[in-house]
View 1 (cartoon, rainbow, N blue to C red):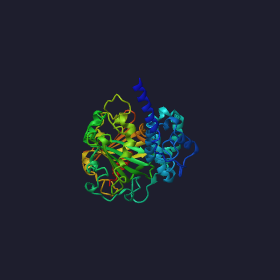
View 2 (tube, rainbow, N blue to C red):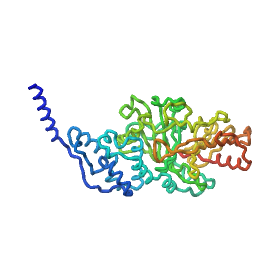
View 3 (cartoon, one colour):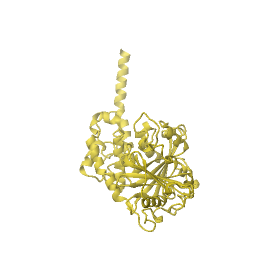
View 4 (spheres, helix red, strand yellow):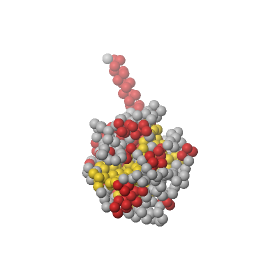
Length: 459
């Protein structure tokens, strides 16, 4: 008993001594708070400021070492990622982008940190408070206000002018690797489409492409986890509105790569991450720590192997919102199955909330030169077939502010050459995607529209 008593006394002495080892947590008044309405700021102050500001609020039990050390680490790490006390110094678009990410982290249950919320239940965000944040952001009202109209030569058919979308060609093989050593795969432009995204939060349209391994995994539903060798390319363009009211891919913005090699990239959740911006494809960030932004953003979907995208696939899955089965529900009776073809471009019709992607069979794809920089449609050879697939949109369940394809609404085919049937144009419409027989003038107009769609510009 005497020995036990001595040990207890020693433990108390050590515990008391540790309380003196208390590195400070810098604090002070906010210098440039986020610009937002009072109800929004009240929610942020209640639920976020404890960690994401220069005004930390520690409960009494947070002050006790060694727990204090963990709290201090969490606060300093949180401030590095997002500090609401200084966010107001950034442009309004950057402030909203940060708030969009915060809302998505809340919606996905990643913020407040579950461990923090258990001990600080008052920091939780109620459904009503989350609705207030979303209503303030209102992505689809603000997005359409900021989409730039297309003007000048080449826009008479509602398509992008060469000036709007024509990049200077970049030698992909000479692009510098990312700061973390991840190289740009020059073959990414030839990968097949996994899905598309309409991002109302930042006014971009996106292709998500996958290499052969990724495509096979999506087709079979073998994506939890994705197999080693999987490669994704997320290509983003700034949205531009045509005179027809449709929204098209405008200026090339960036390409992001995710490379799955579980052993090679063990320290970054099994994925290699890279991002290249602008027509010159400059590596993103100032140093290799940029990858912390990638892993932090994708951590809430670690249950989906860090991947936000729902692949358009008809494979069966027992899990909800793992695959986008509805978007893949094209009848086998169609004369061709375009989802297996190469994607050329896309557009969104904001009037009826639909999105369309233009696919090309092998003969048509060979005529496409998205890096030629002309902003013009290709001259398709005999045997070329184009397919314009139109879907109703739905909200992306993984990202507030984005929309993805949902139920197919229409499939249109244009066949080029003397052997083309039905005048070269066929349309499948309605809930069953049954074939229609449109008037000749309508068919001719649609053929002209589809064949005149220029490829989305590449760097």
